[in-house]
Image 1: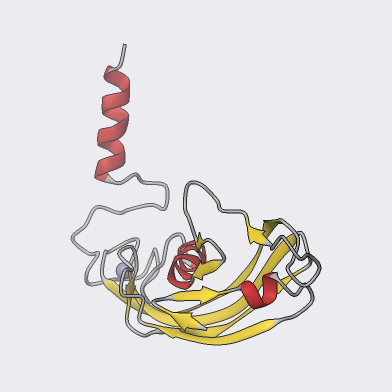
Image 2: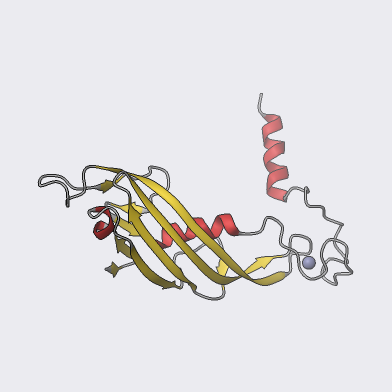
Length: 174
Ligand SMILES: [Zn+2]
C-alpha cells in the first residue's frame, strides 16, 4: 500500500465509510526546515464521507530548535496531530460503473498525487505548525544564561536582522 513515500488512498476513496489505518515511521529525508533527531512516528487514518476525505493522525518526534534568546541548541520532544479534510470529486467506484472518486488537489502546496497521499508533505505541514513560536532554553528570558550573557538583551518582539533589512528596503520604495 505504501511505496516511495506515497500512500494509495483509493481503498478509502472508492469505499466511503471504510477506514484505512496505517502506522508510519519516517526519517523525513527531504525535511529542510526542521532539524529532526528522531524519526517521525505515529499513525494515520483515512476515511471518505463520499464528498470529503478525512485524514486523522497522531505523531511524535524529537528535534533540535534554537533558543530564541541565546541561540543555543535546544533538543525537545514534539508531538502533533493531523486533522484535515479535503474535497472529493466524482462518485466512488463502489457506487458507479463509469466513475471513480478523486481527491481534489490543492494548488500551492501539493500533498496528493492523484489519489496518493505524499505522506512526508502532509507530515511536514503538521510539523511546521506545531513548532513553538519562541522556544527557550532552561534559563528562559531572565535567567543567567551563560550563552546570552554577552548578548544584548533580546525580547520576543525583536526582529531578526533579515526582517530589519526588509523593512529598510520597504522604506526606500517610492
Ligand atoms: Zn537560551
